[in-house]
Length: 109
Figure 1 (tube, one colour):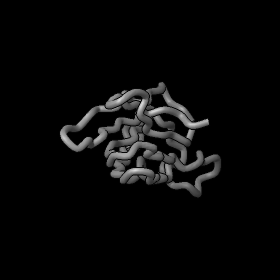
Figure 2 (cartoon, helix red, strand yellow; figure 1 turned 180 degrees about the vertical axis):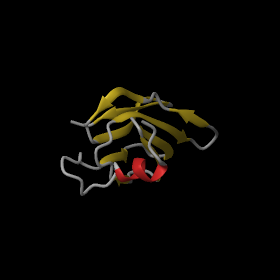
Figure 3 (spheres, helix red, strand yellow; figure 1 turned 120 degrees about the vertical axis):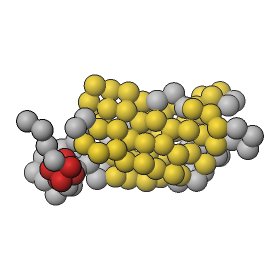
Figure 4 (tube, helix red, strand yellow; figure 1 turned 30 degrees about the vertical axis):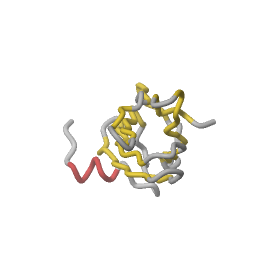
């Protein structure tokens, strides 16, 4: 069964019974970070975070499958290692610097 865009968006309603917690991304780096949160069968959310900032997104019944992030250094953009899953209900994530100039998106516990 193919869903319309309106039906897919409705799955992200945080007031649905059984809704997952909002997906939250924290930028722990000292650089600006932009990226996207992808879900199974739901629309993508985009974020643009200054150093130390965070943003949360209602996702209703949508399982998270991937978070991509690009870190904007002074002289170049660096693709962070993405967070990937077949579909998770986890909700807390961070962009971290694992070595000088090396970044990844990880789950926060």
